[in-house]
Image 1 (tube, helix red, strand yellow):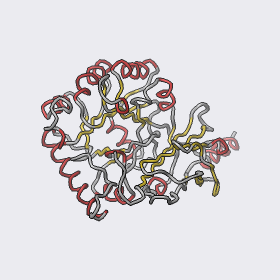
Image 2 (spheres, one colour; image 1 turned 180 degrees about the vertical axis):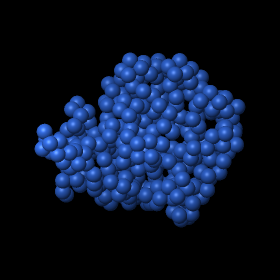
Image 3 (cartoon, helix red, strand yellow; image 1 turned 120 degrees about the vertical axis):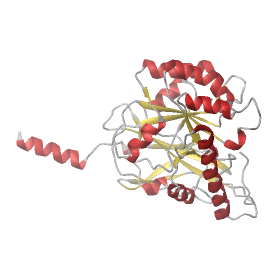
Image 4 (tube, one colour; image 1 turned 45 degrees about the vertical axis):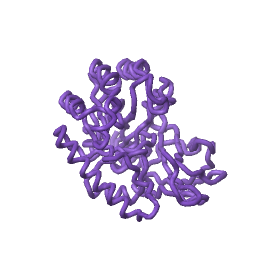
Length: 351
């Protein structure tokens, strides 16, 4: 018996398994009348909430997950966080009543500069304060919803980034002034960022949320926290089920802070380095829209690169990598990496 205990201890030390993951969902509009690419109908949104309830998922507040990661506490399996970007009025009109009915907390990321403008499209400060008082966590989406990446012609990258981050701090103060909340949670406009931005945001004390797919795990870098898009065309229950079942690859910090800007016609850095190998390496697959499946080249047991047949086109490019778990049969690890490619003349693509 003593030998068996020692053997089990050695196995656990050598092959320790990653903790369970949390899934963060991101929505924008809850409406039948808004652009489909950023919308989910109220009827379909309720189907999402029904599925969560009927399948024993626990919807938790965003700060609970962040604090667990900060304090090196294990994440709880089957936990989900619901977030909204942009502060549209239909969130209050159509989303809020449903979430209250199900008793689900949620977070809304807003741009303070849009609040006084376009009455009817965006929420007013009075409405946002009422939602805040009703338990909605209010986060920061940037003061003007400007990309941190798309630097205007004639402006240096450092100057642009410093200006946007100064606006972000201003935005945080405005949110606190109107709601009493200041979490320093920042959802990246358009999901665009650089490792330089990550470093500076970390120094400013912000937790940063992307628009890349993937589950959140104990090793998730808090300067690039993934969220699964759940609006159209990804709003079907089959797609939602796959996302809710996802696990987080145990990635090194260097892989989560890799270069994201790729010059036109240049090859991107696709190296991914992992801390854990709790997946079937021969079944790892990476895909990118418009290019199909990448060729996987293993550098060693924990590092691989993705090789694509052609260069990326100008715009936002994302690779999604999945692999089945060894320790949790039937579940898949999911990781997404983003690259941002300017046009041939060096100018940036439209949003």
